[in-house]
Image (cartoon, rainbow, N blue to C red; front, side, top):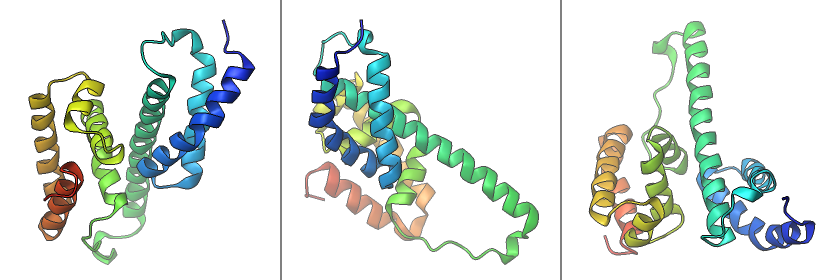
Length: 183
């Protein structure tokens, strides 16, 4: 059974802007966010029969959208690695200018791309969707103490990945976000 055109149109009008904003916050690119929305609805059309109605359509669409965005981050990381390898073959390492250590969305996305699926979902729900720890634990299917452990481990890895120059900024930003404005 396929999704009726009227229902598909209604879902698109209602949820496409929300999904686009979410994808843009994860991917950091408006064009890629548009692709994410389109791919989300393509998957809705293809997998309509798999939707069991156990949750709202937005919950299902969020999950599809998040997974697609996180896969794009992983793919981007792979392409960047190939590009860096090719550049290293042509240009000696000594002549490349060192990157300035600063916290920005691109670095956070790069750190996130290195994480496993569950940790990525935890971070996206907490920091992009602004869900509480309890809501995130339910959405991911783990306990709150397990979520805390996974988040703490991610933050430790993120601090190492960003270097000592930006650790304080990252911790303040993440705490501010995680605790609703109270570091």
